[in-house]
Structure formats: C-alpha cells, structure tokens
Image (cartoon, rainbow, N blue to C red):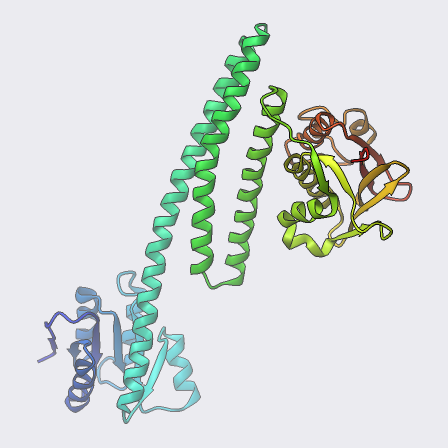
Length: 401
C-alpha cells in the first residue's frame, strides 16, 4: 500500500515519508506517543499528493528513495504555492557537507541523521511545530492589526474631510465675526475629541506590535510611528489650551513655582533626546522661583525645546540656561542650527507662518504664536534673536516672584 493516514484528530499532523517500513513504524510510534498525529507515505509521488490534500504541519522526508528521491520531492513541494509553506525536515544517513547543503538549497529547514535518536527527533519536531504555530499566530495578529489601522485611517480621513467642509462653511460666514469665533471654538474642541480617540487607538496597537515583532528594524519603525502619534496628541492638547485662552475660558493660576523643577518636568517629553540638552543654572542660587502658571509654562517650554531639537544639527547640542539678570529671572534656550531667516523674524508670532528658518518647516507654524500668547497672559516677556556665530536664542523673562 502506497500510504496510510492517522485519523485520531491529534493537534498537529506530521507526514512521514520513507520506503523502509521499520523506519515508518519507529517514527510513527515515537511521534504518536508524544500526542502528534501521523500520516505515512512510502514513496515520493504519494507524499506529494498527500501533502496537497492534507496540508500537514511538518514533513519528515527520507532522501534515499527509489524513483523519486527526497530532494526532488522537496523541490516540487516548494514550487507549489499550496504546499510551499510546509516545513520539511530531511531524514538521512548522509553526512557529507555537499549533501547537507543540497538539502537546504531545495527548501528543507533541518535534517535528522539515521539511525534515529528518539529524544533528538522529538526535540527537533516539537521545536519546528512551535515555530510554525507562533508564525501562524503572528500572521493572524498582523492581519487584525492591519484591519484596525485601515479602520483608524478611514476615520481620520473622514475627520479630515469634515475639517475641510467646516472650513469652507466658516469662510462663507466670515463677516459674522462673533458667530465665527464661537463656531471656531466649538469646532476645535470637537476635532480634538474626534482625533484623540483614533490616535490613542493607534498608540495602543503600536505598543502591541512592539511586543510582538522581533526585528530591531521593525521595532524602530513602530517606535517612530508611536513617537509621531504622541506628537499629534500633544498638538491636540496645545491647540485646545490655545483656544481656551483666546476665548478667555482658561482660568490662569499664578503661583510661585520652582523654575528648575518646571524645566525638568517639561524635559520628560524629550527623554530620548536628553543627551542633546544640557541644563545650566545660576550656581549662586539654590533655586529660582517665578510667579507663573506651571501647566502653561510647561507647554511653552515643550514647544521651544521641540523647535530647538527639530532644527539643531544631527549631533548638535541644545543649551538651557537658568539665571538671574538684575531684578529679573531669565530662562534661555539656545541651539546651533541654521537660525531664523529674515522673513521669519518679521512674522515670528503669526499663526500658520511656516517659514521659520532658512528652510520651510514641516510643522503647523503654531508653536511661537502659542508661546507668545501664553506668556502675554502670564505677564512674562519673550525675546528671540539669532546668535552671532550660528544658531538662535529664545529668552523668557520673568519679573520677581
């Protein structure tokens, strides 16, 4: 009989192909005792047909068989899209390097030497069955995640379309200033709410992906996506605060605050860039306090540090100095980037002016405008200038607390 099949419903099924009955009996008994289902074939042609019909999880394939040897069987299986993913392990008494190399070239992933060692056989079979199961699970998870990403992308596309349509409506009603301001405020709140939900979803799925993937390159891509999502969430928070201030709905709380501790809190957002930022404070002071709203000041510092890091050279350094100047307390952020263009210096605080430096920014052009608005309501001053040699400096000046 050319072949026979085990029909006990075992979790995994292994197709054993060998023209020697004693080998088939030994292998099937060893695997069966380990709870592994067995399918038997005594020649290459039957093996190919059974593999196409039953799609076993793994094939133990003898090399030295009459009519069609194991190399030819494996090659045909790998050429067929239906059976190409089935794991093949060769059974062989050949130990010459060229024989082993030929086995791998035809598509096998491992080989077991005759005479068989039961412990080694079981260990190798189980290892490859586990790898196959994990690979299948990862593939299934990837399919689910891809669908989730597509869904979130579709939601963002709809939100973006809604944004465009709303902007057109607002432009038509521009002459009604009071109604327009109210509509814009409500609109921004709504968009922030609509965007944060899918963004948090993407953030969650990237964390799952990061745990699943093993490739350092894949992890780097996922971490980059996660970083971009965090920036979008932060942008959402800033625009909401900006809107509340403009509408006089934000209740500012000015209290004595440790400037150094506030700087440390703002720098938490830039943990991965901490080595690029050096903080220098007035050594003559144990600590400097300023009268400010700490939450708003942190938003200002995050925006200014983000700009400095964005435009600093790859191995550039950001300087952050805290010191007293006469009766004022100053916080200065410096970088050695290209500096501000003349056009940018003329329009520093205009919303959505993207010509920030000597090349066009890829941001939204709201950073300095937001900072200036916040510092104005906190009665702090903002000074910006290019440095003589290279780079720029942004200085926040606080009156005495």
